[in-house]
Each structure stands twice: as C-alpha cells, then as structure tokens.
Image 1 (tube, rainbow, N blue to C red):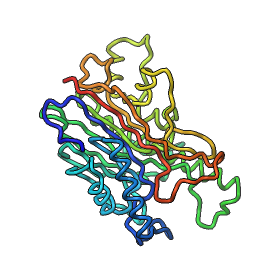
Image 2 (tube, rainbow, N blue to C red):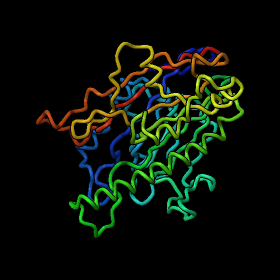
Image 3 (cartoon, rainbow, N blue to C red):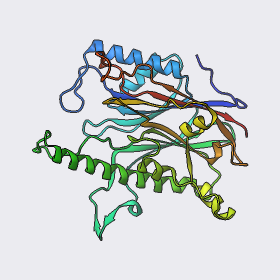
Image 4 (cartoon, rainbow, N blue to C red):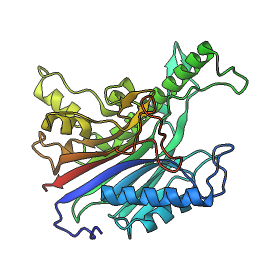
Length: 334
C-alpha cells in the first residue's frame, strides 16, 4: 500500500483512467444498458486492481455515471485508501469526470459553459456550441507545504457522429456530416479549454496538469490547440519566454525523447492503435525550464488488456475498459 506522502517526499505519480461506463448495478446508464450485480463486482474489482498496479497519487477519471460506484472502487483499492475525491455530477445519464487524490484538494470547480471569448463564429454567424459536452473539473491540490498545483480533468467529445434521431445511420453521407459535427464540437471544446488554461498559466509560476481522454492523438489539431505552439528557434528570447509561459508539454513526448522506442497507445479501433488519453504538464515540470520545480522522469501505459479485434476472436469483457491507463512519475526538485 502507498504511504501518505510527507513533506520532503520527492516523487509523485499522476494518472488518467477512462473507466468505460462505471455505474452501479441494475441501474440504467445511457438509454438501455445496465450491469448485473455480478458484472458490477467484476468491474469494481478489476478497476481497483488496475489502480493498485498504477500506484498513482492523483488519478483523473472519465466516464463516471454514479459517484457511489467510484467511492466503492476506491474503497476496494489497496493503494487508494484515504483518497479525497471530487466528482462532476452526471447530467441526464451522461458520464462525468472525477479526481481522486492522496494530496489535499483545496478547491474543486465544475466548468460546463465556454468562456464568452472562446465561442466561435464563422462569417459573423455564431456556431451553436456554448458548453462542454461533458463538464470539466478543475482542482487545486496541495502537493507539499510550499507547492500547489492546478489539475484539469477532461473528456472531450468523441469521434462518434452527432446525428439527428431520424437520420439513417447507415448512410455514409449522413455519417460523414455527423463526424464533422463531432470534430467541430471537439475543436470548440479545445479552444474553450485553452482559454481556461491561459488564466492559470500566463504570468504565473504555477504548475498545471491537464489529464484525460482528449479523443485525439497528441499531434491532432485539437490537442495542439490545448497545448499551444512551441516558439520558433529564431524568435527573440523575450517572445520565447512569453510563449513558454503558456505552453503545455505532453508527457508522451517527454518520454519519447528519453527512449529508443515509442509504444504509446491507449485505444484500439478497427486495427488502429491510437493514443487518446493524455497527461500534459506546464513548464514547471519540464527540465529545460531553468526554474522548474519538478521533472517528468517516466511514463507508464497500462494497455495489456486491450485487444485488436481485427486480429483476434477475443473481445474485451464488458466489465473492463477499452482504454489504457497512463501514469506519469514526476520528481519534485524544489
């Protein structure tokens, strides 16, 4: 079992975990689905076992339908005893995000609406996207006596097409239109999240972590909107510093630069191995920043349970999750 971190502990581990519909037994989620009591116990025990493998001090969760189910999972996990939790209240049978932390949660905010400045217009016409499809969670944690950190737990819109109820879902054109709508919404969410991040990143020496299911790879436009653009090497130093101040760095890229190989994937769909689940850190946790207070030293991806169903007759059991978990180990240096 992990021990309660004390002042002077130098290592923290943060993780992200898409739970794939964590719900109480015999209670409907979405429109028709429900777990039997046996399936629920299998899911609770499996998730608790994964948490014990991860050994993370802070975990951001996605797809929580019932907060009570998450509490029971944490109680079952040996490594999560005594964790504090904050959960977004699920809306209309849609899954929500949550955070569990060994460190004190000083403040937790649920953010549903886009900031006004983030709302998109096209040719002067506003697009009808004004809020996150799944509200995000912002939590301020006390890592040590002297270090506070803001963590955002997010779950952006999936690639699943947005289609009217009366649409023909087998029509390839209607499906393409629906996928485009999902992409536009996910892009709008990325812009809104970026604006929220600016308020805690800009002109502050304050560590920030973003974790969750971005439903896109690290090089996708939406992911790059959230992280920001790395300044060109020929840019003046003062302008570089201003951009570094508002950048986020994907721990996947930090790990890749330290390794000879890159096997990062957290989801398999139609034979495509994709990294959809990410942890992004601000410059306070990046070695190249002379004023860093910590550094990412290792990234683990727990994806052994994923199955490529285009190659295998096996299927992921209903009570497991179809995503891998990501854990970043951060050594504090301040």
